[in-house]
Image 1 (cartoon, rainbow, N blue to C red):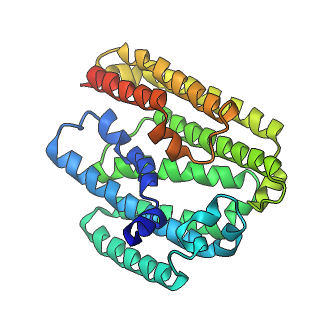
Image 2: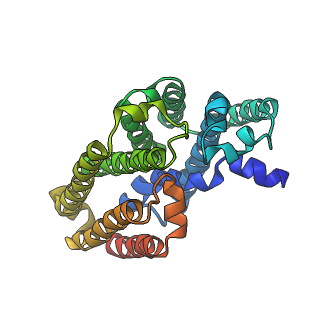
Length: 290
């Protein structure tokens, strides 16, 4: 039971977001090269520890607010399953491990980890309370992961891929806010993010439409760009675009029709059509690139 509580506090399922670190590895055609793979894997786990550290710090900061939230009150800290002092000790231990591990990586990757940590600290204390900057901060976190993935193996990353990453993360952040707005409307007594007062369902719908359209356009343009065709020696990457379109539409369906969206990771790990779509995308992309 104790292990389960710490598992929840560290948000281990959320580590799936750190797979963005592998994007440069896959698209630079180094996926099956041992040295490149294990360096990227090390970077992935370091991002996992850093993101867990951020979640622990965020839970400590939001302890009182989370106690009044209909869902977050069940988390280990607000529920009392783990004391605040133990959470602080865990954060200190994680920080020491991360600082020690960074000495094995290049400077640019270390700077990326520091930038990611600093961004999330600013987000926890300040940025998450400012309309629009809150969702752009989330997007910046994903972009840092991709850039760090390129830094750690010293490869270039396509500008189109960076733009696709930005719009995907903006889309997910907007849909999350939309789900939170629906939750507030359904439970008028719930206390949640103050920034939600600056949003409306119509506004988030419009932002989601812009972001989702931009994801599809940027990714499609990446697949047919001269640089992409030249690097992979093929125009077939365009055939992976339907998987991206289906993923966007499926996610919107789950949020709008099934009222799921406050937990992105839960959708990615539990919705069978989404899982199959992601696996097929990875398979087809790998076959085309390699």
